[in-house]
Amino acid sequence: MIEMARIAVPGVERVWAALPEARIAGGAVRDALLGVAVSDVDFTSPLSPDEVMRRLDRAGIRSVPTGIAHGTVTAVIGKRGFEITTLRRDIETDGRHAVVAFTDDWRQDAARRDFTINTMSMSQDGTVYDYFGGEADLRAGILRFVGEAELRIAEDYLRIMRFFRFFARYAKGEPDKDAVRAITDLRDGIDTLSVERIWSEIKRILAAADPRAAVALMQTTGVLPLIFIEGANIPALNRLVDLGSPPVPMLRVAALLGGDAEAFAARLKLSGNEQELLETYKKPNALSPTSTDADLRRALADEEAEALIARSWLGQEVEPGWDELRGRIATMPRPDFSLHGRDIVALGIPVGPRVGEILKAARAWWWENGCVDNLEACLKQVQHRLHGQ
Image 1 (tube, rainbow, N blue to C red):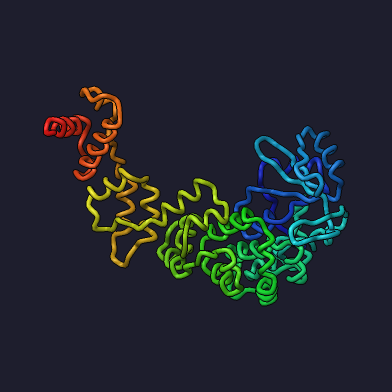
Image 2 (image 1 turned 90 degrees about the vertical axis):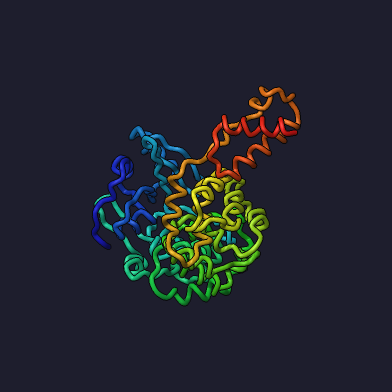
């Protein structure tokens, strides 16, 4: 047991007032030990879900049976929800789902978790219970499965992906040899997972401050080729991180993906917005520190600043001035082509395809001239072209 300060999250004390025997579990305890700000708090309890709901009701706390079959009730306090899960033990697992039974044994519940750093729990008096050496592993930057790595993975193959996510965030130095061996041997179990779950974990892995070691380990264990079937460009990702780019998952996916973005997006069922971002980021970068203001205005006339800045990271070369370029893009007002179809019609052109053709030609003229001409200038250009025909 380890003594530590309380977790200061609004609503926690109300949950404990209703359920004094409950403990905060998992990630909140892990992050509190590291001094990381805690926002999401989950509880475990030896009480049955029905009793948990009765206690919350008596305390005036709304409860929602969000996962009642697996013993989870959510206490809603203000705009914040606290999951409270009855202590459990696994009866049967198939690599994706588990059949559980409730228990009052805290160690037994901790033993069914994935990694030692996630097994700790904290009681109301601030005492941390650590059954599997999680605190020592956390301090040392060691990510270990609880018990036998092969058994933990076989219970839920998503733990392979979770290993890389937690490795990217918490690990230091060499990975645990038992974990690496088990992941390598059981990596094909990833094929049993939904692509949505895999994609969710990929984004979390790449959101880490420095995911390079985790991605390299995914390659070593043979997991990366199973996910990035279209090809993976690890040097491009490493270079992007070396440059100090922001930890934006889609930007890092664009760097890492070495093949067809459309095929990748379809296979992993990316959202429409995610696919659009990925394909936008994968376009060639046309700007550089030597780009003129006219070049930037033309680019901004066609695309959002965010996309141009992202591509500048992916296309950055060795010469200086790239940060200044991104600053220029971010602060330059987006030019507005203010000519509309109604303006063409007002000149006496009947509504129809010709209006669109005139607008397209006028915009091309505006764009070539650096996107600085206003409505009046554009109208004069249109009139000149019309009179010259």
